[in-house]
Image (cartoon, rainbow over all chains, first blue to last red; front, side, top):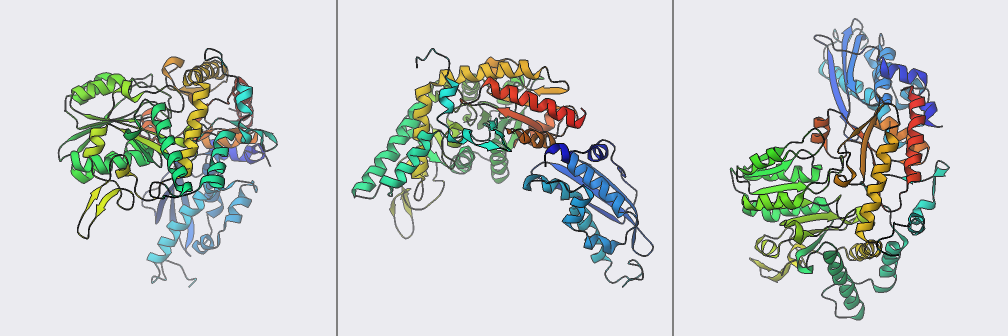
Length: 140
Length: 412
């Protein structure tokens, strides 16, 4: 696979017009991380809704087309899902979402940065609300 | 080859086995020489020869192999020292430039830099010429002061002169920027610094591999460089220091080789430079570095420099034809090392480097261990093409056509 396949129209579109880009007031989840190799940065914010669902999700960040597009597409995929869904999210899910690009070891970190940030934020939230059934909905 | 003749690139290329390999089925166009250079057969052979024929520990072995290894190691020290205009007793073998600045930070800095002192460096430095001084300043309570740049990417000498008024104890500056290619007038900088009473440390990692360097003419107190950026092996480099300074310094690491006598409650130190070479030294790679110095000397550093100046001139002309390309740094080849930093439209440098790699074109993308400089440039990262003796205008043409392909993919 050559980079012409990696940088498909969709990826470039999400890079230049990222969906759900921005910040919200008083988010329930707020996490950020960076990739020291590239300097890519992603911050994810989530408002948790009834039933422990992702009611609203936003991200800001700067970086390469792969990291920005991946974070943005992930916000669309995550919206409306239960927080538990984030726990199940895998590397393969993210790569499938990006159209299964063949990324080398140095670039795969770019693709996975958004997922890493979302997971660390949501895990933190789940941990902090472990004893609070209301906050986590009626699923436990 | 007469010294006045241009460098015969095809002949040089035949000495580098790696240039025969393909990357994604394409000819390797290696333009990441500021990160590390490739190695000629002569250097690889020197390593194989050492391990096949001589391998032994140095200095204290009385047997034949030990004596041969010592002669080869010390012979290499003499060669490398002469290459930069220093005496052999002024050259300490280290892992590379980073270890050299850290050696100075510990062995000189902790002894001679006091609370409230000022250390002056610049915002064009590699992290290895910033972070050790930050750590030193924090440890002893000194102030770190940064000299800024003019818009053309050269040092702001008015700001430098103003910084000297604070009577700094140390001035640490790069000879040549690894991002912009800016060549600093280190001779004048060191002379002014010395008048102001400062000790000087020059980072020569991007200078020694690419141009004639003479530390005596520069008049610096410390000068550091890395072997792997000058066709030599990784893991070996040099710190050149004024003999009286090296003698007055504390040891860097303690252990074997660096001592004269050891008692239960104290020890005395070996002579310079051995005082700074604790433990079994990197014998093989220092011999490899000696072979790299022989190789470069045979070509002639004046010829290496003019070759790279021609490539810089050709690159600036050629890349000016690429729509959306922004170049960072001086544009006068006589004031610039063989380094071209650029960005292409809104394409992130990492995406660009990935696309170029498809075509076998190896460039660097990122902050180049110079984040303060990236902030000054107002970018998160740049792409960087950097040259050495085996690069030709064909390589620059390959870079250009790959950049055009990237523009197409990104519709930039």
